Image 1 (cartoon, rainbow, N blue to C red):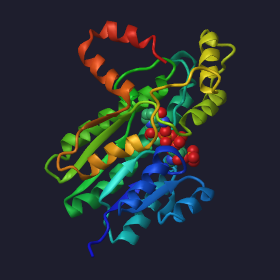
Image 2 (image 1 turned 90 degrees about the vertical axis):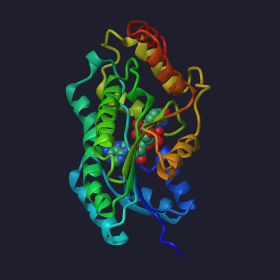
Image 3 (image 1 turned 45 degrees about the vertical axis):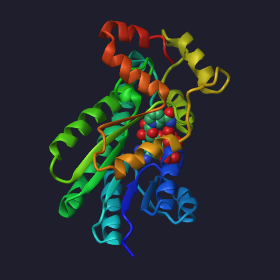
Length: 277
Ligand SMILES: NC(=O)c1ccc[n+]([C@@H]2O[C@H](COP(=O)([O-])OP(=O)(O)OC[C@H]3O[C@@H](n4cnc5c(N)ncnc54)[C@H](OP(=O)(O)O)[C@@H]3O)[C@@H](O)[C@H]2O)c1
């Protein structure tokens, strides 16, 4: 029997990571799934997944993860799905610079470190897939999401550059660009706004109150929101296709955003984006 392909998936305590880890396992992959808390390990292990601890803000946990996976798999990592991240909401003028640094530490620098450590293993085998769970906000800006938008724009820049640099190596890099997906993302973002943004003393207080009402569930429901299986559909293409694409938009708003940015004059596009939320 052929040996299972091996994948590392990060951020598997909830949402997209939790779903994709299980779906990959069901599709025959050997899955190493990372979480930050020990209590998040047993539910994954119960489904045949090898759960490991890793926090992108702690470089020693990244090295320990790669070492453990390499030991257990005999150095075989076929694919890496960088997924674990969070969104720091808040107007750019209200963002403490430390909150912006923290956003980059998780969403950009940690992903870069893990990717750098995995590439040599892939190079040795002459093949590999690196899939980055970016966001449509990695391609188009969004009001009150400056920190997150900037982190995903940075991720896009690094990843498409890496894609070009790895051409011919057998290692392929793809970005998934989801729009709204059902997960704990919004609840986690709410905690971050409370932690870092002085809502009531901001010139944007009225807008924050309106958005908080929506995020807390008392506003209109986003009818375009899809489940994490929509992300899995394109992840499987990025992992299995002979020609994995650079960008995989997921959800209607993500597809519309990419098309409108291409077609409209920049000023008109940004004015239009001002009215989305
Ligand atoms: N949901 C959406 O609408 C949406 C849209 C576009 C893109 N995305 C992207 O999709 C990915 C997954 O998000 P999700 O929607 O599934 O949200 P989620 O349910 O909040 O899951 C995020 C995961 O990331 C983990 N994580 C957070 N900080 C981390 C760190 N420092 N180190 C390692 N892991 C960390 C979380 O672990 P803890 O439980 O320990 O916090 C959790 O497992 C993210 O990259 C996000 O940017 C989501």
